[in-house]
Every structure is written in structure tokens, then in C-alpha cells.
Amino acid sequence: MRRSEYHKALAQAVTDQLQGKASLNIPAGAAPLWRAFLELSMARSWHQFGPNPISYQEIEAWARLKRWPLQPHHIDALRAMDAALLEHFALKRATPPGGSKTVPQTSGHKLSPKLFDLALS
Image (tube, rainbow, N blue to C red):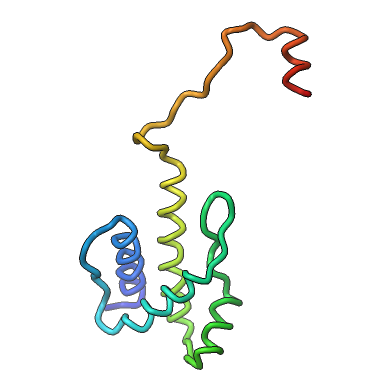
């Protein structure tokens, strides 16, 4: 399996797990990377709209603390997995419960100078 296919397979495994699929389907030999991603993901920071990406600094610090010699392709795999997680949360945020976007509520009143001033205060 080429590296790009390997990264896609790991990213798909993340997506499958986030969607609640029962079985974990990761490529052969990927268990250490999967555990690394889980550890890094558990330590990630969040903002009001969802998770922040795992930074290169966090990956480097984790690898140094664990004394795990990461190679560039390992980092690429971790970043692909992280991108899948971020995409999942972005899609979840973009689609409200019920599956369709709601139309913003509008006022039945015509805009008047008083209403405009009230909206600005």
C-alpha cells in the first residue's frame, strides 16, 4: 500500500469511528499510529465551534516525551487523521439537527428609524 493510500485508510478509520461504525478497520501495522493519534487527540484544545487542529509542536512534544522517533510520513498520517476529525466536526456544525438548514427568523414589522436604533443599542 502506498503512503497516500495508507493515510487515506487511516483517515477513513477515523471517520468511521466518529460515525459510530462498530468495527475498527485500520491498515496492518497502523496500531501504534492509531494509539498516538488517540493520545494526541485527547490532549487537544477546543474552541466554541469544535476542536482545534493538533499542531506540529504538540506532535513533536508528544514524540519527545514518549521517546518515539517519528518520521515525516508518520506526521503526515497523523495530520491526515486529524483532518478527518476536523472535517467531521465542521460538517456536523454546518448541518443542524433535523438535517436541513433553517431559514432565519424575520420580523413582521417594517424597518423604521426607531427599530433600527433599537437594533444598534
